[in-house]
Image 1 (cartoon, rainbow, N blue to C red):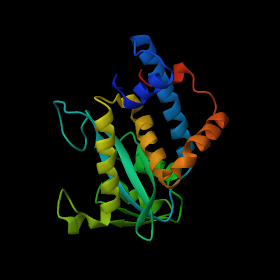
Image 2 (image 1 turned 90 degrees about the horizontal axis):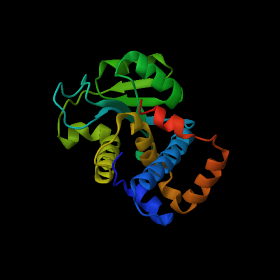
Image 3 (image 1 turned 135 degrees about the horizontal axis):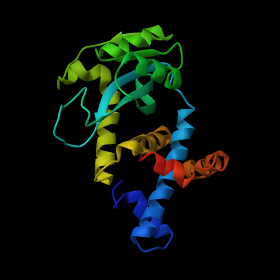
Length: 222
């Protein structure tokens, strides 16, 4: 996580502390505890109905294989639940790889049976129809033609906003913490219609969430 993480800086300001190394680490730990609570809260809420989904890699610029199959990047699935062709809720789920077993696990945890999913032509997504959902696969390749990509306009819009949000806040994202960073974006997006109530509701959720000790946070970093 960047030393100049916006939330970390805001946290230290609220605590009226100077940003020393030790205090910075304390603020970073508090950020991860908050993010972990957000992640656990939304993990319990699978998407349903009409859903756009896409395979995504997150990672910096490193030497080596690029794109799908790269060991330099972290795979995750972005999904958008729609109602009347408007985005309602999203899930950004880190997966081990883009294989059928990962899609099966993702479906079991993040998607309600009976949903209708639209994805691109990635082979592993054929597993969707084997898990109680209907599946429409469209091959658009790397086209920038808005007509060809229009079936995925909402998931592409979410990913564009996600990229701007994270890259505008962090200089570098530690791979083991990516799920929490994605969770903070998803949590805010899914509650964008009730922003005034979000702090109070989050405090209530936090009180009901089991403690997240430092050893769990640091264990993710190996």
